[in-house]
Length: 354
Image (cartoon, rainbow, N blue to C red; front, side, top):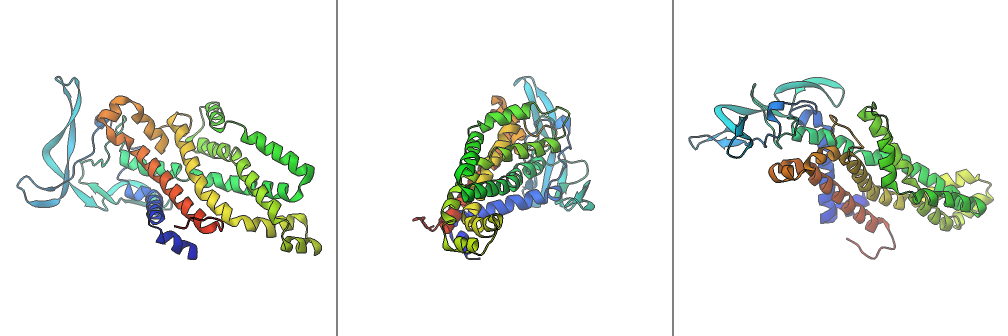
C-alpha cells in the first residue's frame, strides 16, 4: 500500500497508471465496447473516413446524437474515390443496442453492445481500413494481443532467469563460469534478426493463435539471459549474508536456500525489471507484425494494423490509420514512466525521489 501511495503521489506515474488501467479495461471488455466484431467488413466502405456525429439538427436546435451513412463515389476531377454523406436519412446513436452476437468475457452469450446506430446505419469512429473493417473495433481486439504479449513472455523469462541466475551465483566455481558463458552466448545472438528468421520459417498454415504462442516463446527464450546475469550478480553478494550462512549451518539444502532465502531478496529488482521489460516485448511483437512476420490478417494486432499506414498516400489522406502507432507510443511511454517511479521507490541507493 505504501508503494501504491508513492506511485499515486507522483503526477506522471499517476497519469501512466490511469492510462494503463484504462487500456486494459477497454481491451478486457472489447467485445462489449466495440460496435462490430474484428471480422466484420463492408467492402463498399473501404477507407471510409471517421463518421461525423451531430448533436445539432439542420434547424440549429439540439438533437439526440445522430450520424449519416457514407456514399462512395468517383470524382473525375480529383480522379479518385470520395465519400459523401447521404443526408436523406439520419441514424440515431443508441446505447446498448442489439447487434452481432458474442460471449461477454468469453462466457455469457449476448447481443448487447455499448453503442450503435439505428438499423441500416453504420458508425465508424475511426474510419475503416482497406477491407472496410471498423478501425475502432479492431484497435480494441488488437490490443488484446499487443498488450498481453509482454506479460505472457515474462511468465517464461523471469522463472528461468531467476532460477538460472540463482543457481549460478550460489554454486560459483566452474559451474558459474560455464553457466555464465552459455548465458553470454545467448545474449550475443542478435535478437531481432533471429525473430525475423524464425518467424519467416514458421509454417504458413499456422493459425494466428499458434503463431502468437510461438512468438511469445521465442521472445522469452532469447530474453532470459540478461536477466539471469543480473540476478547472478545479486546472489553473489546475498549469499555472504549471515542469514544464509545460518541456513547452511542448520543443514538446509542448496535448492532450499536459493528458493526460500536468496531469491526473495531480489524481489525489488524483479518488480522493476518486469515493469521496464513489458514495453520491449510490446515493441518486438508490433515490429514483427508490422513486417508481416507476426500476427497475420485477418486477425488484428496493433503492429499489423499499423502496416497499412506505411504507404505515403494513407499517411496523407487517411491519418486515422496511424492510430495504432499512437496507442503503441502511449502504452510504452506509460510503462516506462511507471517503471522509473517504481525503481526510484524500491531502490534504496537511488538519490532521486519523485
